[in-house]
Image: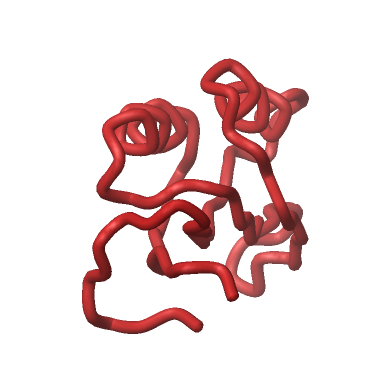
Length: 95
């Protein structure tokens, strides 16, 4: 369960993010390849149409790791550079 309180990294953490990319060919693939490059396992991905911008989608992604881990911080910085916006929902210990 996600919490507004920051938790300490544990062995089985999961992080949730929400982001949007430009509505251009291959932009989602670029973002997903960043996770692959850093060997981060995606556990869930889904999309919803953006209600504000026709043709744009909002992507919900869960992955293994904690937002306080150095490799996750580096990965999210790269992801952010390829998104129109990103929000880290949080990290928690997977039950």
